[in-house]
Image 1 (cartoon, rainbow, N blue to C red):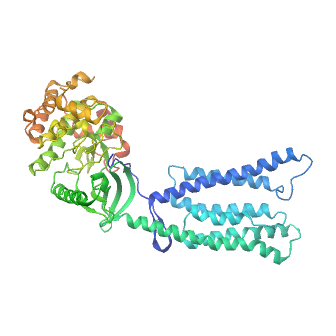
Image 2: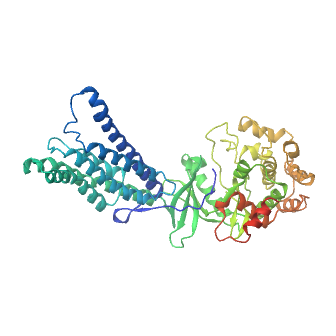
Image 3: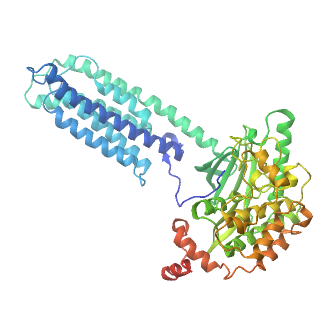
Length: 534
């Protein structure tokens, strides 16, 4: 699952009846439904124009427009179509305020009702139900709002037939008897009262969704990502207002299907989360909290990161310079060294679990994610980057031979995986290519890897290549003996001009400006551009 790579955006809420809150994704969905509804109404008015101005004259060339479509129908229809298209455009605008769009939706309901009543009553019509009945019944299901505002808009909309009759009377047209008019408009008001019922249902459902998204002391916000394992949400601590990220993990994704298996997974999840909470390296993603929901889903609460994972970094910008590879992976070694000292093996080191981000005033600050968490089975057996089902923990493209063989593994499995990450960063290619996860793991077991210099157009220093190839040794005894040793070997590589905080700052300003915090002004723009070109 792509994890916590986010732009600078905030969840948006709408207040519902009785203090309820419609979650941001449901609010956005309601706004988009309003846009679709406005298109449908525009289409109905276009159809009315075509039927009464094109089809009608062809079928009855000697007849003028009848009372059902008097002369104001054309300008009214064109006006409604223009308003409908404008509302649709607003709901699709990138800066659309979803709450405001729902407020506009109530005004739109009244405008539609006025257009219907004006045309419908240009010649008094007290026979049959008005289209306003349909409008006031259906609209609240599309545009949820407070009961008070929904009722007010529905009653005003229901009054548009009487308003149309009043306009007709002002023109000097004789009206039907009062009893007949009251009987004709009464269904409008009945429908307006009924329209409040769906609001209560929608409010209650929205509140249930909101409450379901409160985990521990955290209020969940917008969805950041979704994958085969579960979902990641932005969140805030309800008292401290501290931003966080919550990963909700389905029990079946961890192998908890029933009985003792479920109990074992819960125990393992608890034990490993507790172990991960003991890690204090600044290069390890901070774990704030963890737990199990009433429905058996697992969740972890982590610090919210502002950055990009190394998998996406290469996919978007191509292979990384040797100096930057050394800079990034040395930080990852710092995190792994502490974990290994505590006896905690990551087991799934891969580019997607290594984040480079802004922390404080520093760019290219690496964070290691997902210590000790079991990985999900793949949705597609052919996706070799996903975890292999029912075999072992890890990702085939970055899996140490001993893990592929289901042998006892130690910290040197992470060293192998970090070598695979270095290979990916330098070349933009996996160490091995294969059609299935099984074939991929077998190649890690018995196929010698090609040196990265033979698969890259970059000039890879021999000293760095030697370190990477040492990490990829099949025999773990021949790999660097620890993450600390590996970090020292990286630092001793001759990679030319070292990557620095200043170069990192300039690169982020040039390539990921949306992720650069506004408060960061350590490097001027001209200096940043010069460093970016260096």
